[in-house]
Structure formats: C-alpha cells, structure tokens
Amino acid sequence: MQKIAGATFEDSMVVLDGNEYKGCDFRRCKIVFTGKAPVQLIQCNFSHCVWQLGGGAFQTLAFFETMYGQPGFRSIVESFFAMVRTGKFINPDAPGRPPPPPESPPPSGRRPRRRR
Image (tube, rainbow, N blue to C red; front, side, top):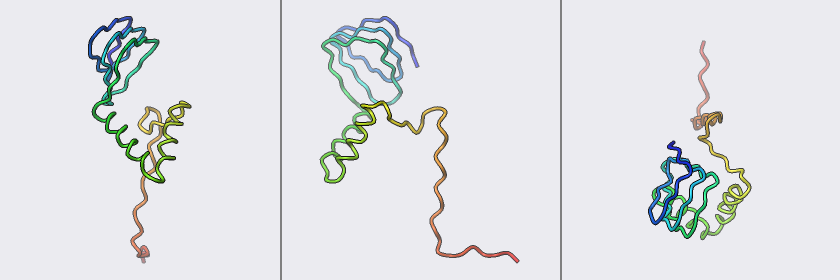
C-alpha cells in the first residue's frame, strides 16, 4: 500500500485503490474507488469533490440496489448497512481470522461399509 501524506489534490481524478492518504486535501476532484485494493483515509479533507464507484465496488452497490427493490430482501440490505453504520462489518478475508469450516460432503444415501 502506497502511503501519501500531506498532499493537496486539485481539479484532478484520484483513484483511491491501494493507497493510504493521511492529512491530504482534495479540492474539486473526482474521487474513484473500484474495490481492487483496500484504502485508508486518515484525517483527510474533501471540498467540492465528486465520488464515483467503478469495477467491483460499483457491481456490489448495483447488487444491493437490485436486492433492496425485491420483496423479502430489503431487510438483508438494511442489515449490511447497519453493520457499516456500527462498525461491525465482518471481513471473512481479514488477516488473523480463522478459515471457515470445511463444507461437509452431501449425503450419499448409502451407509459406509464396515471393514471385516
């Protein structure tokens, strides 16, 4: 992850993916996030910027938008937004998390043979 500190961006397009921005100023910029790599925004200021999602980030938001409009799925989307609002979003790929349990094989309908 590239670390950028104290920089000022003006009238430009800035792709956030894969960077850490600390104490930066963004003025009249087009801010783009595609979801290809993590981003850190630490004590940055944004003035008159336009935000845009692309790639996987856009596809994820479009998926939520479609789900939200379908009966029975609105509560699922709301639960994701609640996790974001409370800071309790779980990233299954985060370092230090144990791997998920292996899936059990589907039942075959036969009993295992006993060895003699």
